[in-house]
Image (cartoon, rainbow, N blue to C red):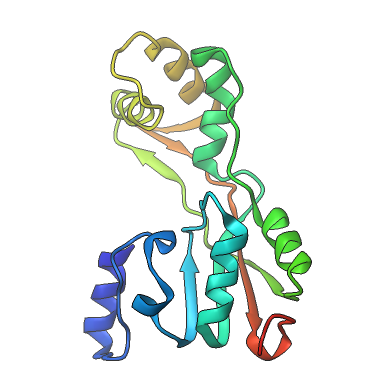
Length: 187
């Protein structure tokens, strides 16, 4: 994500974007400073979501924009489907946009929510073996012990195009934003 941003910054000749290569929760307000706009793009897996959101709100002069998920993202769907069979337990997903919106509301922040269209993209593997290898890695498996379950999953959920396997993506992406002048926490 950062590499893509750096590429766009260079292409557009932009000079007023500063990238801070640290986790949000590890940055002090002094390191970040106030900015017109605070953006968090698919990076909201904080242990203390409340504090992270309040810090974003405090450091934005004009607006905060968050990009996140509604429903279960495709990569979490893989875990939801395979964890019980492989690990003998349910996979617990990250909080989604409904939890985020309700937390913001409880903080007196009345955010806008926009469902983003055309942002989902399928996972494509050149072969079944590549698909199995990628899902094994995504599940944190170091052996081929569960390759049969993964193969069955790919055959059931995937679509074959020649030798390629394609897993469709039904992830729903959202943009959650608010202006500081509409935030109850603004000065």
